[in-house]
Length: 279
Image (tube, rainbow, N blue to C red; front, side, top):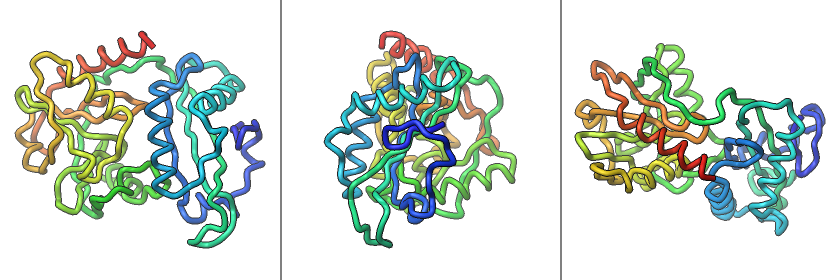
């Protein structure tokens, strides 16, 4: 069951052959974590989606308010079997018609959801090895920062990681600096200096990235900075971790011959969960 433009319908009732998201990647999406019917970090998700739609010149319906977005997500989740939490995805796409040039800039939406077994975030204390993905690069442009359905770099990178036994890969931009991981933003701790690449390096404008930055700026003893990260910097770091809204914080334990601690990542997860409990 899915929510298609405000109605709960079976998956089979949705047509793909005229869907511009399927035909041209003319679509944006937000991946949401839902707890007790509440979309975590709702305001950040909503405003990122609205900004992205404006960048792609999509018409935003007047009815599509932040409250409406949460209500439509909750309506679907409540119709599914109960679970501790849910992973939901809202996709928006232009109305059918046209080829590269749309006939209509008005939009529709679709929401899907699946259960998660843990209500809050936790650290996975297991080996997690990454490698650089060098086949394709992320361009340093505004479109790279959006969650569009054009994810070919991430898809081919995920296949490369799977074929070579890595848990994740780090993506490079066209300056050959590390921009992000396949499924999230990258943070690097060296001494007491915590760094993440700036949005101008082509990384996703991540929702969990924003939460972690807010925590870092108030964390005693940590100096935070948005700064480009070179592959050479990775070898000198004490900790690496990857962030996204579903997993929260995923520590990296190994990159090539370098092994990393997970102390800061563990402390950040505790503060992140405290924020969620406070609502």
